[in-house]
Length: 135
Ligand SMILES: [Fe+2]
Ligand SMILES: [Fe+2]
Image (cartoon, rainbow, N blue to C red; front, side, top):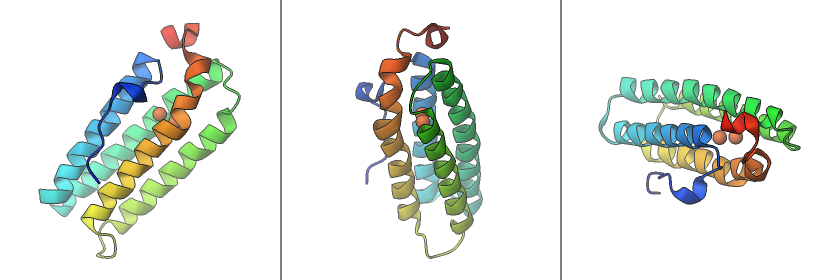
């Protein structure tokens, strides 16, 4: 699977959220590079950075959805928790040989893109133009 790229159709209509999604995708690309040529320490660092940033992004996004009374908030928040669990499990497994480096980046690309396309884009109509999203 090729590395993920941010394209305009991924826009959720809120510049701050788009910027955070782009940052996560950039981090995935850097991690992809480490997975090809980097040391185990670089990979672990990349995974830790991604976990920290994902946590920060999910919190920002949850505040936005709450402020805009997004009706599927609970389900979306539950998926964020699942995503954090999944990436933490992957980090634990990253040092052993059963998960190859190619598998790690494939899993994470799907991890990020499926969520943005399947879940984040769904809140777009509820947040675009909302004063909280503008500020
Ligand atoms: Fe989300
Ligand atoms: Fe998001």
